[in-house]
Length: 455
Image (cartoon, rainbow, N blue to C red; front, side):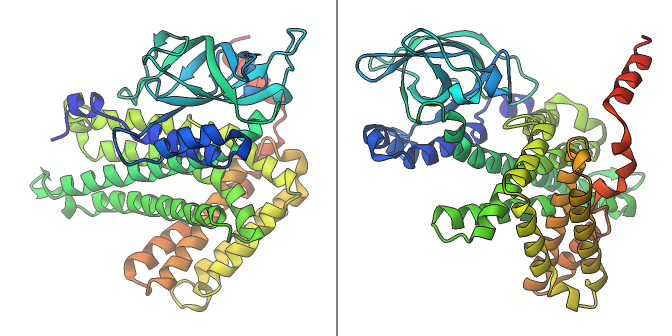
């Protein structure tokens, strides 16, 4: 039986492994000029030998900014004669504080003691947490964070007081240097979301076969089974999206991805992270409700699942931050990512559109796709306020195409057909459904808040 003691005091590996995986990818791709770091760190980051294995942190967040590293990073890197740097700064949210190494951002101090502000002033640094004597590398733990969830993971406020580090990006290219790491950790985040849904659903299904209410088992009540069925559709949808993004990443890593697949990966990574995290919160909350009062009792360990899931919407970018990242991907590629998604959706629903069971549902997906693409083209002035709904729409449409394609390719089982049909019957284009919401001006919104506060 899960208890609060063994769920909140035990180990938590998902976050450290995500950051370690991301750091390994960054270091593996370093040029030959950093060969000593690659030879020292990379084998340890991928080792399966507990005596050799290293974990990596990811110390980016500072007091002035979370996702806004451009204006929020105040850490200064002072060059040393031996090619190293001394870092001076305050890292406000440092996950996996007990890691062996970390990647972090800082501003290189020039000869005049000045630094360059903004993104162009940020460089990426490799820092080992402990020195040769196993002592902290001029790092002071100021405070351990008292977090809502993931309490097993040590997160702290750290003062870097001359920590020895090495620059592993070109000067001013720190944000570009962490892009690969963000891709990896965001996919890990989406996988954790899918796993959280599957875990609570498996427990709720099992509980329904054991718990009697009003003279019968929960599994024999149609309303309860409909609730579990809805959760199942969400869990399957999240899983198939994560697996598709992982497939695209694998193709890119091995150098066989087409241009379209690379564009899809760029777009789907933030979409998968933001959408599955929201799904996880909804499904886990619904799952707790399936246990009635037991779901609210700490002794069962169930409340910890909900607390741990909340970080998934925040870490590596909140929903709004990632929605804006989707807009950047569209803008920087001049819409090519949307063209790639459109082509992929159309090819995936082609076979399903020829089946009796899913012909109408394929048509719904096609229609929703065209409406969303038209919205993007005709409403550039509404892009910012509609960014979240646009992200949801693109994700729901792409999941629909994946489920339809999966049902056909896996033999048209009743479960796969039912899952695809249920998903496609939902709102696939909330950015179109909520069109009237985007006519509200910022002044109108401020007026609402003023009236609410009595001003």
